[in-house]
Length: 143
Image (tube, rainbow, N blue to C red; front, side, top):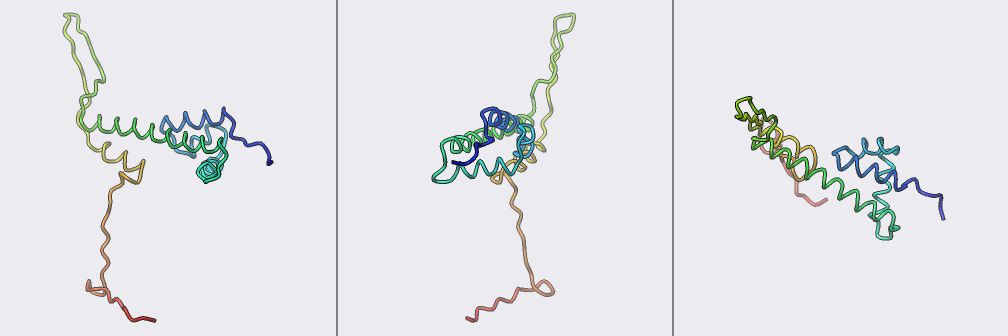
C-alpha cells in the first residue's frame, strides 16, 4: 500500500467549489492548495478501468462540477444576448417604477462558450494550394 493521498475531503470540496464557480483546473487547484498536474493525475486515476473508488468518485464529481459551471455561464451568455436582464429598479416618490435592463449583446454569447468547451468553438476552414495558387501535386505511386 502506497503513501496516503493528498486528495482529502477538504481539498476535494475546495476544488469542486472553485470549478463550479467557473475557475480553470489550474486556478481551482491553486485555491485548494494543490497543483494542476496533481489534479489531472487524480482525474486520470479515476478514469482508469481499475480505479480506486475514491478516485473514480472524484473524476465523476470533477466532470459534474465543470458541467455545472458551463451551464451557468451558457445561461448567462444567452441572457446577455437576449438582453432584458434587470440591473436596476427605482421607485419614484410618485409611486411609479423605472426599470433599467441590459441591452441585447450577442458578443458574450458568441465568445464565452467558445472559450469553455470544444463543442462551442468555431470551425475555421483551411485551404492549401500549390505554386501560384494552383493544385497541390499528390503522388500515389506505391513505394
